Image (cartoon, rainbow, N blue to C red; front, side):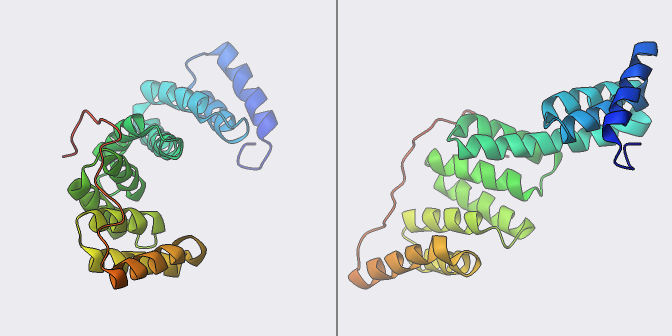
Length: 203
């Protein structure tokens, strides 16, 4: 029923199955997928998948871990967008512990590191993010800012130009601004500043 698009019916049958047997992993997975996709409650859906994985790890542990990583990535990006960099940093570290090549994990962690004034580490994370996804314009922007802070204007300008190709409306003004600064011989447009405190250090 679920795969045929009859999701309300599938959810109702899963609930009936769980009334008869609360330890039915198949019904828990159906209910979890419904809550995640139809009710837009990935947190509740993930709890159902977790229970199913505990009951039948051979069949459902991988599904639960995939769901967990998706929730962590989305939460990290959401917290970053809201300026909650300390908790976004913690989420990103969890994502990267499970998937060291995650572009989103490196992007979020690098952004938090920049807010903490840890510029060299920012460059490393943004480079890894771009290795995983070369079209990640925000990673190019953040790396460019970090490079400019270090006085490496040529490299910063190269990143800004690449970002402007991907998103001209957002990043072309930055290219123009940096070109003017270069022509005028002005000091770095951004300076290293620790706005937040991050407890853990990335590996």
